[in-house]
Length: 455
View 1 (cartoon, rainbow, N blue to C red):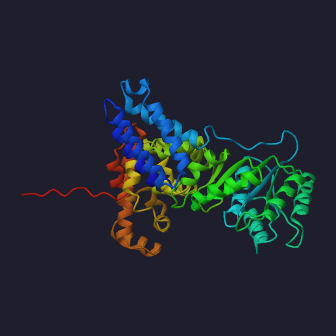
View 2 (view 1 turned 120 degrees about the vertical axis):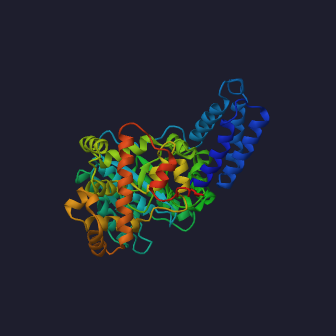
View 3 (view 1 turned 45 degrees about the vertical axis):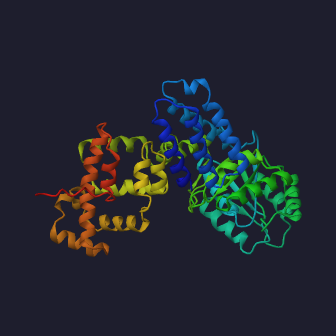
């Protein structure tokens, strides 16, 4: 979502960083570029004006213009202001010290509220909570069925009384039932509307009064841009909420909602939905997001994702195999499956410091999930010996593997060749030698080596 904004800001700050000394004119020029970048990203105009004014004031201070490395100071200031713009320190849910924690979900129809409810349930379940969901959307066709389906996939029990019951009574009954069954968390999925109306707010207020939730979360669709901020502002005026869940943050919207909602409503973004799978849901950390936007990576989030998939013993074994070049195609298959569980490859690259150049080179050639499926089919068509010793895969073996995986011989050849390059690359990294971006890009086949004309 932030790719265009990220490119513009990184380009502007790169020019500033390259100057040994900054003048007021340099700062003014940079502020104009930053202002345009934010406006093009659909950030609220008043928010942009206030943001650039604060950045300019700090940049014109003697500690910046007179410093030995003023460009780095400007980057630091922009990073800090972006973090503050999105809420400063990340905020978590409030949990009951004793008894059940109640979370009330609100939002307009189509914002992704029901799916976000299940995603939140899965995240809390992974943290050891026993979660129940209350189906209080009795107006939208199949809403109850949808919650039952996604709730089951999230490992949460769903309480429902059908579409004829009163939503307020359903919520109160579900809370009693969750208490009786010893649940840790009850998430109440309420009805959405196509627009803000008094009936929606009245019903929400009644459910809130009966259940006394510890957290009220508003789900807004990032794809609606400034409309999402308008919705959040309207809800803030009519029904007080504690935090925001941004849905569809993986889409191609320009990111204005995520950058504006805290400044406009005063309420922090607490969670972000980053994909279609239930696992694609994470706590929103403003400081980490600001670093991603400025191309500084997000190592903490990357480590957290990796720790969910790889144990410490597995990581040490992988390190040993990489250093000794005993990493096999069987190991590669296992690692590929684990990486795919961590989320889209492009998102992961955005979390790695210094990988902006590679991600930009691959921007127009996103990793095809179907291609990864084909790679898996090719490896599964090999014998255990061939996976351990790819150099054995010659002529007739390649033909057999291609036929068994439904692919072409050329695709088998490419996989074996790229695996050999990757194994050598991994040995470099395991011994502390970081490859340059061009080398990584060549490994993925995106950059061709220049042809040398011989006379």
